[in-house]
Amino acid sequence: MEEKVKKVLTNDIKPYLKSHGGDVKLLSVSDDGTVKIKLTGACGGCPMAQMTLKGFVEKALKAKIPEIKKVIT
Image 1 (tube, one colour):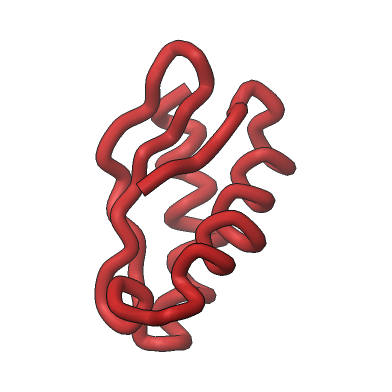
Image 2 (cartoon, rainbow, N blue to C red):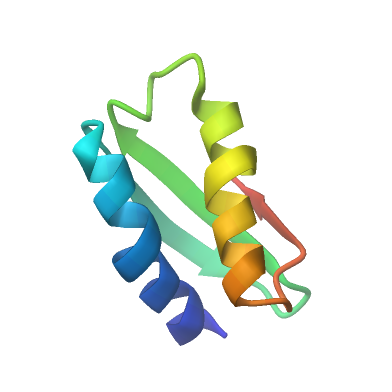
């Protein structure tokens, strides 16, 4: 599952975040479907980071990988 997550992050999520001065780093993927990430760059200190995490990153990962249950920082 980790390789699938890396692929979605690289192809779908990172380009969008980079266009806004941010990025995302994958920290871990657990067997229970929890993905742990770190938002960096402009996204790291943005007051809207939680909205980006839940409304964009988590939504995109769940859409492509149904086994994902939640995304946390």
